[in-house]
Length: 179
Image (cartoon, rainbow, N blue to C red; front, top):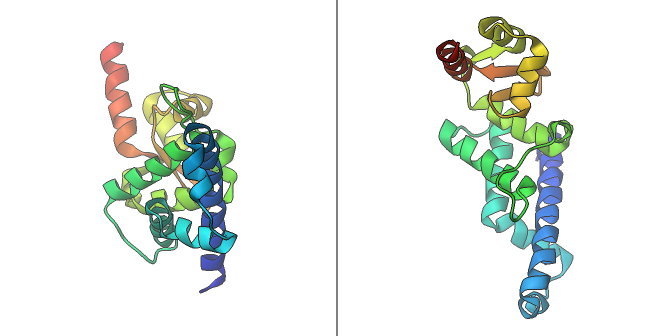
C-alpha cells in the first residue's frame, strides 16, 4: 500500500469507529443483552467493521478518490449520501445538515475527492461563474450551497470548489419563472 492508501485506511478506520461508537451507545440503551454478547478484541472488531457493508462503501469511495476505481455517478453519490446520513442525521430529525468544517476533515476531503471524480469537467462551473449566471453574489452561492439548493464538489488537488452546472441551470430557470 502506498502512503495515501495507508492514510485513507486510517481515515476509514476512524470513521468506522465513530459510527460503531454511536451505534453502540444506542444499542446499549435499546438492547443491552445483545451488546453484552459482543465479545471481540479491538483488532477483531476493526476487521469486522472493515468487512461490514459501510466499511466496504468507504473502501470503494477511497479507491474512487484515489482514481483507482471508476463507478457510476449515481452509485458514488448514493454512497456518499449514505455516509453523510449515518454521520449527521440525528434520530427523530426531519433532515440533516453537514457542517462546513466537516469538508476540511480527512474524511470530508476523501468524500469530496470521490464526488469530484464522479463528474466530467464540462459538468462543473466555478463559484464565480455560477454567481454570474444566476445574477447573485458569491456569498449567496455559498449560502445556497449550505442550504443544499446548489450541489457542489471540491477538487482536493487544486483546492477549488465547483458547482454542478445542471443545478445552476435548474435554479436559473426556477428564478426566472418566479420573477
